[in-house]
Image (cartoon, rainbow, N blue to C red; front, side):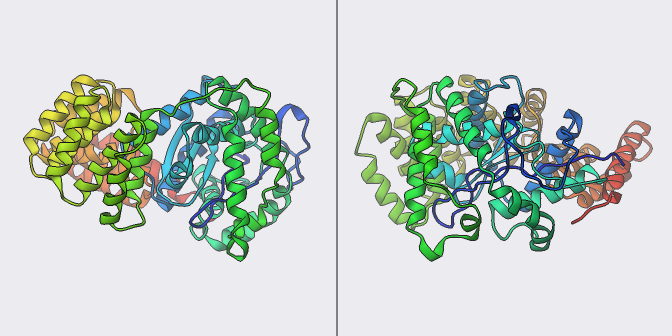
Length: 490
């Protein structure tokens, strides 16, 4: 088995129960100016691109198996667009970054192998400006581009990629979402190395410095980084004995706020307005994760919809419409959404919300007509494409849905939800072989390899005498079985 070294990845904004905290992990490698902590590995081997890619894919499967990720394509589209815009202004503008949202109210962001960066929904809600959110992306991107993630911890020796990724995910999740990672693994495997690298903060300073550069180059406010740090620091100081263990083991120095403020001050002052999409995505998450009753939320949003600039009023009105639809007050939601669509026909979120409100109200044909309009206005929108396909499947139009799903396969890397929709579509048109195959890929992408094999075995039986399908399916079964037989620590 090929020997390689996996990496324990930096989780820059660590979990804070119900509020904010900071995580201060591993050491910097940039320009050989910062001495790495001794973590028991003298080889200094950097992962090859091929190994890192495989590790990144397996890492994502382990993450999906352990914690809920957002299936809201509009939220995912926004996060991808914002993250990739900032990455284009980094030291690796052509690198394929992948950004995803963790459905967790705690404040956290973390980087994984192969430029996979996770952002908690709670962090998006905690930011008070789009530049603040962008500063988190810029910081995490800097960890990747400065190769802080490559040699942080020797996590796997003579191990398979899936086994290494599972252990890596457990360690990262143990830091990011306390109680998720297996306690024994975190205590035994990660404990000693983590203690030795937690106290090396030079990599954080470099990520801040490079992140501010990227932030300014991407036309965001570089002062947003110290502003966000300052609010986190103020919030953490009020917690006393309630501070989670992660903050106790990764203390956040006050100097970080002043250091980043001094660096940001070197850039010309720039007032950056929030995009309307940022406001709408935060509003959508707020409605989804509201801690109060739906009645209290509706009352609060009703007041907010009458205050501020027109864009701020519109975002509150959008949130109010979502809340009313959630409360089955479809007629009231319809009136608000129709008005928003007329005001801003170029804002896709208003149109898709209107279409989904009609669908939930049982007006499926009207919903399909609105999605047809949305598809015409926003032909390149992945969220419109997938939402439209889903409604078509529910309405018993699998052939038309398949045209949109196949279009998605041509332009994007498939996600678990796409595999799921494809399996449903092929089932509806009575093509069980492909239905089972895509269902298998859904389970595999969710880290459920055994369930994937079961689906493939059903596909093999359904294939009958077809040599083409039988050979294809058998090869895939053999691949997954070999992966299961590989040594694992979990």
